[in-house]
Length: 310
Image (cartoon, rainbow, N blue to C red; front, side):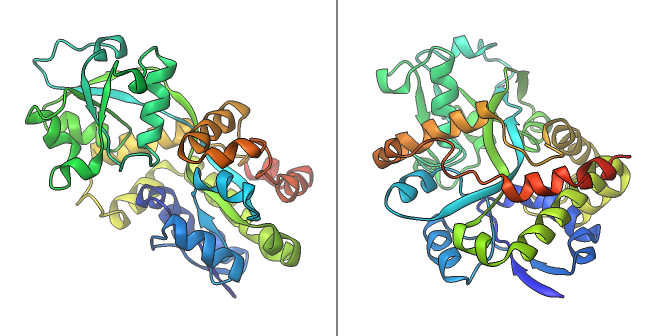
């Protein structure tokens, strides 16, 4: 059994990772995966090249600037290519659409210039509201450290927020109005990231890790009751998740998961724009430069993925 480190950049990734681990999919391919711990972007760029960490889940934005300065970061697969967003407002709010956010303030669940704060910047801009032109404002997390996004809306600190499950269900339980809006093509949640050197020197480990992840996703898709039970028993970051919340999370992930782990061009294009906004050096790099699909393509061509869904 080979020991593999696979820390996350966001704890939301654990909703899927717990299911993959508890399904036995990684173990089936001879891997003991240490996945339940956080890693910062800075540590990720330090620990992956030295081999202290084999893979990272996420790290979607800083990588383009780092690549421009000589880093060898690569992405090998992508589990989610779209964010199913909802607009969350108070029950007495006159806001009913994204257009109504003009000259309003929305809360962000992250720090300024970070993912997903940058998601919100891009989403609003694509819908005709430019933060840089003061057409709408984003209140970043560090400006309200002691309050949750839901409390910020309830208390009137902000007018609205863009949320994804399970936060949307928790907002509805808290008495807020949840409005469906357009989704956002985006590289988010579980990405399998490592260094080019690791891929070259460890093709067997790369193949087994990809296969275990693919098999875990198939288990998730084909076993709704077991997967929901695993999530409810293991994901406790927001307290005990009710049956309704777990069901919403499962349905959202089932809708957005990519069973083949291939990224979409729309999602790559959008995340690249976030990378450029965060770091001007990212402009020196092609949006596709960090994506190495050869290991996944070899697995796909063998029929492995197709056989998982027979």
